[in-house]
Image 1 (cartoon, rainbow, N blue to C red):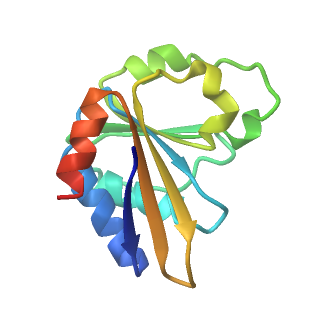
Image 2: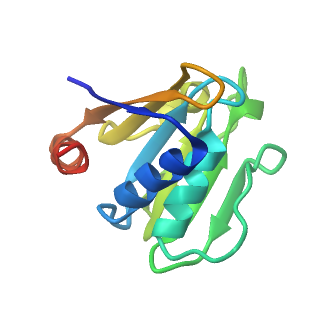
Length: 150
């Protein structure tokens, strides 16, 4: 089962992510999928804001991981560069930390991902319109999606 929402602006993308952040707990794992320019970084900036992070958030494309301290800490992964790689940078330990983890391009590290997680797919509908679809894996994320979409 999935949950779908349509948003009409980057501001609404950020607001949705802030609302989601209010429901997250340390140890939660989110995967973000979407074409370049779909709004993954905008979504992550909203999450960071909702987690009480004051530092500027940008995509960790060249570093794979950026960590931010807030009310709840954030591990922001961009694993695009790990495509066709067997590189394990300690994902188990990082996902087990007292932080929320967001992974962009998660399909490239599928074998390292815990079964329980929330997959988020962002699709471009127009210049500013987006469709955001949530695929919960596990009871916790199913409950979280129901709360988010009420």
